[in-house]
Image (cartoon, rainbow, N blue to C red; front, side):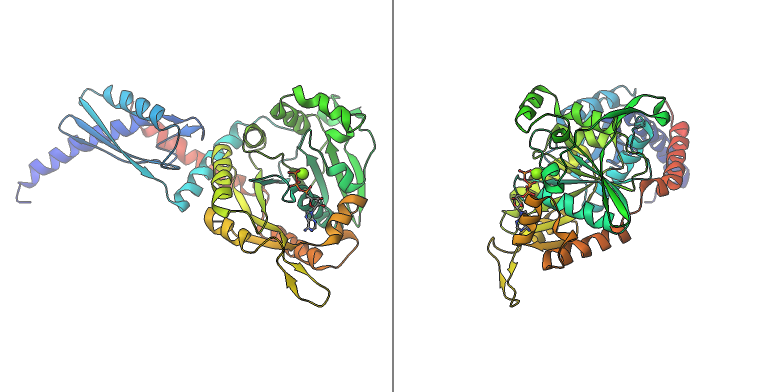
Length: 404
Ligand SMILES: Nc1ncnc2c1ncn2[C@@H]1O[C@H](COP(=O)(O)OP(=O)(O)OP(=O)(O)O)[C@@H](O)[C@H]1O
Ligand SMILES: [Mg+2]
């Protein structure tokens, strides 16, 4: 404290210079899952030099991040390359919820810049309907959200990404075979035309392997096909021009398809469907892992098969209660709504007419509330491109200024 001002000043300047250089070196450390460097992602909390020892404090998306050891090697070797460093210590930390969202937004902006254009218009709102477990009502939720959006006048693409477990054709009552037509907007390249179903003032445009193969049985032939590759084809080789929304009925599982979707369509956002009964914590781990690996933002949770409401108004929670709320709380996103168990929902699925189109039942009311919310809260990513571009410029300027 009583050191002469001059000494302290020159001492701290030298240290600061080294620390700035070390930060510059760590800009070479890329988080492979997020596709950007740990400094710009905000994962480097600090780097200090103390004698010859460099101490880096690095926050991971989750404490148990499987990339930890490869990041550790990379950080250590980069820091050791600095002449002032003889020893490296890494202190691990975990990003909090807000930081995690920022990191993912940054990674998405980066992916948006790098993604090749697809047949999906950039202003399209893309919602992937997923779950941590099968049979919870993903397909029913997908077709009802889509039908309600179309009823309100939107043109809604419905992509059944459940390549061999497809159920969208049955639920929407389509059985035509899809054809490919030369498309002038795609350099004359033939694109598959989706099945068109007029609904109210809007339209559904549906694609599913169920509309490509001869019978439900021949879908087995698709087993050899890589799921992620099939999804890529559906996004690139289908004429999606003119759609306002694209709803994707995701296959069960946490793997390749989610990651492929995030890579091909970085504007995709995820809606998670759960039942009231599921052990929220278990599902949350799977869902959080899915979101982390694909760095897809989660819009919210929809609880399905919630308490049956009898005509006299009494409630019967046949599958338990509270699963949606618990899952939403666990992963830190809103509960968008709870769709009750209702015979009309499954009847609609079997007859090919989603319940929202023929009934004002309690389930329909909830779907409408959810769509109100989606319409008011979700802005197409293209409307954010302006600020993204500015953000990227700022990052680039910072990179230019960084030494080494
Ligand atoms: N709210 C509801 N009320 C009554 N029945 C429902 C409800 N939601 C879904 N069902 C029925 O439950 C069954 C499973 O629903 P659905 O096929 O939508 O689930 P999924 O999550 O897509 O399943 P999978 O994992 O096999 O793709 C269907 O028979 C459907 O009609
Ligand atoms: Mg399904």
